[in-house]
Amino acid sequence: MHPLAALVLVLALVAASTVAGAVWRARQGRVRRTDADAVRRPAAPLDGIALGPAATLVQFSSEYCTQCRPTARVLEQLAAARAGVARVELDVARHPELVARLDILQTPTTLVLDRDGRVRARVGGAVRRDELAAELDRLLGASAA
Image 1: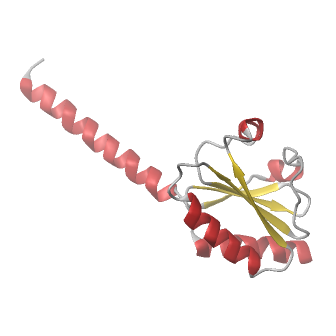
Image 2: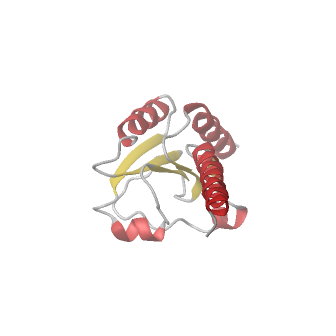
């Protein structure tokens, strides 16, 4: 291969990787609502997990996850500030079947469940407090109506 062509190829790969990384990073911590069809179906059963009377924040963590502890603190604060909201933390190593059923691909991953246990939103990566608070308030307002 010609050295100039090789240099152009390497630069193109670096540029593509940089753009892909920037897009991935921008999506981390964003609340993504589930589509209307997913909301109508019940969530995969969370055997043995007590749901909150209004909503439940379920965090999937791992032992070596650096963002899991700060995320747990944010979720605890959000749940404590809202009546009827429970927080549950599950280790992915202890719940592999649930991880597979719910398509958990990274830790932390947070699921927002309504009072019926349906997944209403999910967050991949460390949560953004303001976005999750707004989504939780929207869900609680909708369930009160």
